[in-house]
Length: 159
Image (tube, rainbow, N blue to C red; front, side, top):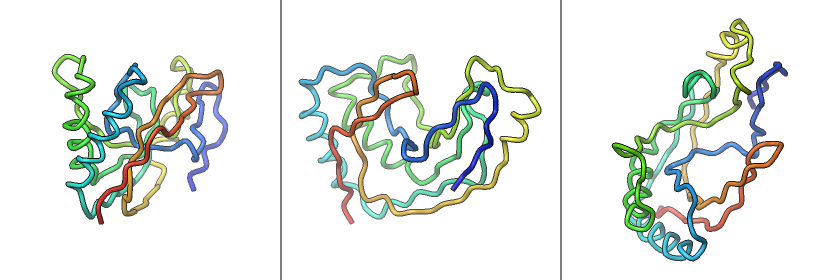
């Protein structure tokens, strides 16, 4: 388990909230959820033997606002998710979104973290490897304590 010491200006993500976003869909009308779920199920049946590797250590990402652990091995899953959802929820970003697998473990609050503390937080060893049996369609809502996640559907990956 990764333990970060309390640092002013840094908000840790509780381990039970750790996840890897395969594609951010943004605001989606709830009436589209069944179609998205069906399409993701079809895509998941094309996948098998997915293995994720986290690590080797923490690093800063997204303009030094996100402390993360890199995740490898999910490009095929992210591509399948993108292909399944683009017809239902088109990509509105310019040039498309590129998948960069990672687990967010902390975020800065308005870049108020001391530069020395930033350096100490980068490079903390963390390694984990696991089989991926499913992925979730998740609803995210912002709250004062940070995002709250609700699983709308769990899509199994073929073994």
